[in-house]
Every structure is written in structure tokens, then in C-alpha cells.
Amino acid sequence: MLYKEYLLQEGIHENHIIYMNFESFEYRTITTEEKFRQKLDELLPRDDKKVYLLFDEIQMVTGWQRIVNGIRVSFNSDIIITGSNANMLSGEIATLLSGRYIEIPIYPFSFSEFLHVKGIESDSRKVDNAYDKYEKYGGFPSVVIAEESIKDTILSGIFDTIVLNDVLLRAGVKDATALKFIIRFSADNVGQLVNASKIVNTLKM
Image 1: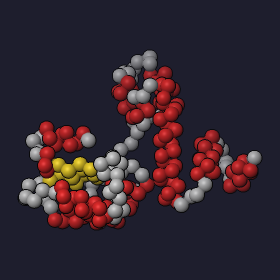
Image 2: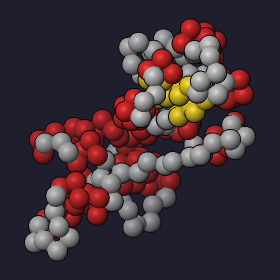
Image 3: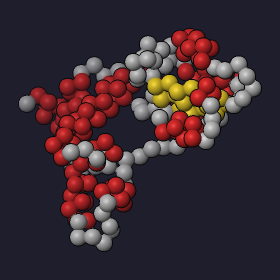
């Protein structure tokens, strides 16, 4: 994590930086509040110096909010948490953490940022071609910097991740195939009147 590297460069001792990525092999089994608490009990230093806790994809841990609140109350700490699915919606965080946080949303590249990454000046003749690419593939950083041959594959993976991890689990949808079809049908019919009957009739075809 880049922020951990920044802290080390600022002279923060490594023992006072705790970085946990809950999608990593090392921490993937920590999925409950109790396991989270036990692991932190092993890692937290027992002095009065400030400790920096960096939790990546924290939504993988059930009940993480109580642990984070407990650390905030009991330790001199800065806590950075990140998440990438619907469990991290700001409305829910506001309720669970009682407003004791600063939210920093991360969005895909804007077109101006896209041009900057590509090294294209805004008055360049390459802008029109760049916009065609931006319109086709969007502004996800991993897609923007990827080779042309694998952009579609990466986008497909992002789509599946959002559908499976966010929509299906959150809404309790059981038919993933039907949901994907409805999403693609809606995307293909942007700007047109679409009703439930039309979708049902198309599914029956």
C-alpha cells in the first residue's frame, strides 16, 4: 500500500504500522469480529506512541465496525479503511461509525485525467482518437494502462465482480444469468422506453 510506504518515508517505525489486506492469503481467514480482534491483539504495540492501522477490503470481516470503534477509543491511532463493494456505502458507514470518519471516494479517471495518464496534450490532434478509446473502455485505471488485447477481459472481470459481489449478494438474487442479461439488455437500450413486460418477453425468447 502506497500510504504505508509514505509513512515509512516519514520516519514512522514499521512496528507502529499495521497493514492488513483481507483479500490476501495471509489474512483471508479473518472473516469474523472475534478473529479480527485476536489478530490485532497480537499486532498492536503496547506503548503510548501513535499506531497507524491500514485495513484494505475490510468489508470481508463481519462486525469490523465495533473493532474499529474500539481501537479508536483505546489507542492513540490513525485508522485508514478501504472497501470496494456495496457494504461500504457511505450511508451505512455514517450509521455504524457515528460520523467519526472522513470519506474519500475514489472514482475512475475523468477524460482529462485519462489524457494526462496517456501523455496527451488537450490541444493535440490525438484527442479525438483518445476520446474514442475513453468512450469505448471507460476510465478504470487497470483498463486504461492495460494492453489493447486484454482490455475487454479486464472489463468483463470488473463487471462480473460488481454483479456477483455487490448486486447478487446484497439483493439476495439467485439467478446470476438472468440478472446479467437484464443489465446488458438495459445497457443496450439506454435512451429508450423499457418496461418489465418487454424484458420478460425477451427472456422467454
